[in-house]
Image 1 (cartoon, helix red, strand yellow):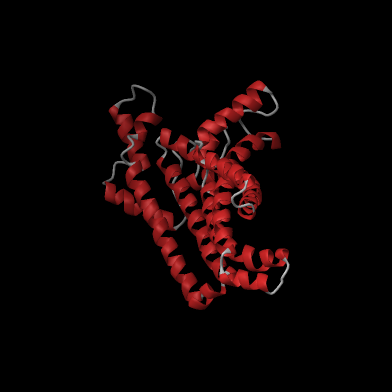
Image 2: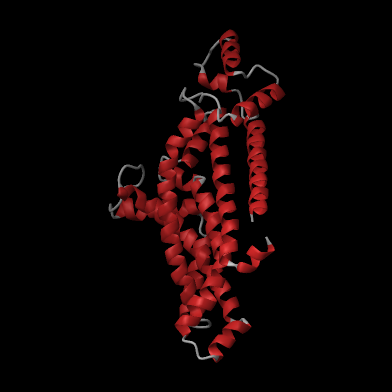
Length: 306
């Protein structure tokens, strides 16, 4: 297990390095930040002076190796817009993203687990049709469209909830519900399929033949095994949510990491782009590492293989 964990850590480090490298080179083709930062009509001398102070006058490979060396020390440079360490700017936005992600994940998993279980236990009945139709619509509906409809109905028409911003729990409701719709739909469909597969296994039939109570069979023989693929799905979704739900944060004006990265791209703020994407990548790979390790707890067969 230790060797497996170390191997996964090495893979995570390579993945983060690859992401940061790609972001570095892609961000350099967005344009010249000196032109954006200085007033319109600035002289070439002023532009060159700013490029020199930002290190943008050096060859691209020199910039890259200098940047990677600094990143290894946790230094992503100064934000062009905020004039503060880029990593500090990103980390300031993490609590808002974490709150939104946690609320959406908890709500989505609870609804999805109940809906998926109802669909599996009522196979071929009206309840399954209703749940699966709703889940399909939930996955197919674009997040930005659903968010706009939420604002139009609950904020503009009814006036119940604020349409954008943060600061109170009321501001959290609409973006969290918007994200939870997709989360619950994904969980419901996967859990239903997993439960139906496990319910058809021989050991479940054997448990029934022994006269065990349906509740006992479902709890100890079905649910635990059916949760293994669902745990993976939850891990992937959690990584995506903690990485910043760009569209949702933008639609609702939520001050999270996703919205910050969009603003940094618009402002050609290279250090913030790099720091933001690096933080997102680290969160994503380490959540998936935790899920891989949790697999061994849920499934002894996997633990023995490792």
